[in-house]
Image (cartoon, rainbow, N blue to C red; front, side, top):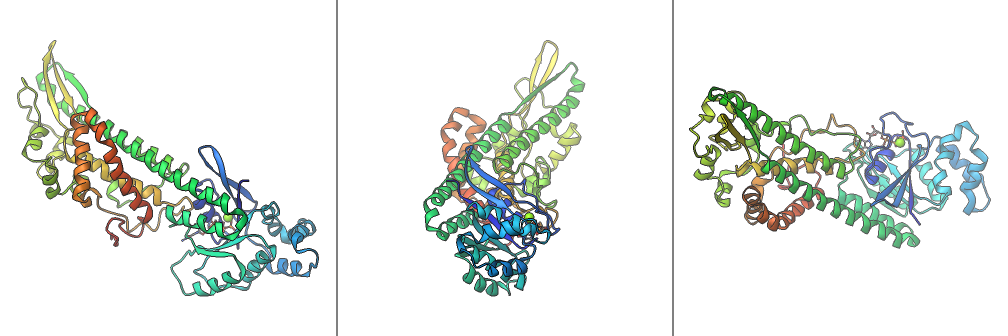
Length: 477
Ligand SMILES: Nc1nc2c(ncn2[C@@H]2O[C@H](COP(=O)(O)OP(=O)(O)OP(=O)(O)O)[C@@H](O)[C@H]2O)c(=O)[nH]1
Ligand SMILES: [Mg+2]
């Protein structure tokens, strides 16, 4: 048996939003105009191609006062009360939505009632709750507070206790993965007969989340590997054209790295089922700065003291930044080149940034130049910070949230690398070191890095990143 839950409530209370978030389905129609959902629509939740639970979106109650009156007038069997109501009134234009929303209940669905707990209770709400109580179906109520006002919560909770088997707070815009699991857990208690089935659903959800995080860690490893190993070579016939060729090559190199990074980020987005909407991080987020910009390299990556801990970037690494191969004269890397490399020169003093540019020598009358692979110790930490910022954004952006132009002021503005505890930092740095120097060894150390990633994911998926900085537990400002 595949359990089904119908999401019921007054128009515009956030029913479709709650469903979208719970089912991680961004095809659900959501709108600020009441009456958006006019017909029931069922959304199956599939894991590994197998449907394990389904949620049905319904139109809001249209005429609950009259509906309750008619139900109370009926003195037939309580077991078939809804069936009779539907049969008698489905052609009544005043009750179209009320009859439509009963459809999933007639086939045995459980009820999730959604109300906006930031507004006062009204008589229509009481009528709706009483209708659902009379239905005799297993039912839970959810307070989806659209505003911050908490002064009405007690009223709502008191009424919920009278009419429902269970009730919870659940915010369609802010619910984390943990809160979704807790809601499903709570559904187990509303009907004893469903306990085992729902227990299986909860376990499957938890396993699926872990599997997705594992897959996400693999995507991040693949991204780091491809970005750190990437190199380009170019050549020119004349010595005077070397500088221009280097600039061109460097431009191609940075563009290709950015493309590689972005394609892996998009894989993460799809993994967490954000298929339709491509939510951008808030405009002021450091994420929007160019991967190779001064700003990015100043804000993200490791602090100087951490660099000392990992033993990476000291004089040696700085020298390696400008690595002119044997036989090649100094090409005046930071002096002769304008454009991109001119900008790189500016950050050279704080956190060095550039990839190696090698002059490979001359053969068959051509001067050959190579950019990458990038041996800069800071570079993988910058990539790591950026992908973690993206991950936190994606997993905490609920599927039911569509107002992406607002509510974005308090985005995390710092990286995570600089807050890694020393023991974690060492493991991560070791993996990065091998990625840059010895791929076979990197593979051996990959599982340790993935352990660190999974623990970071865990923190980031427990605490939404929209209100606070999850690793610091305080507002990020
Ligand atoms: N701030 C905030 N707005 C919400 C929340 N949930 C829903 N909304 C907004 O409320 C409006 C109605 O949301 P829907 O999910 O379409 O509501 P509904 O109950 O399905 O509405 P109908 O289909 O018209 O009955 C939309 O503008 C949502 O973005 C929430 O948790 N917080
Ligand atoms: Mg709706």
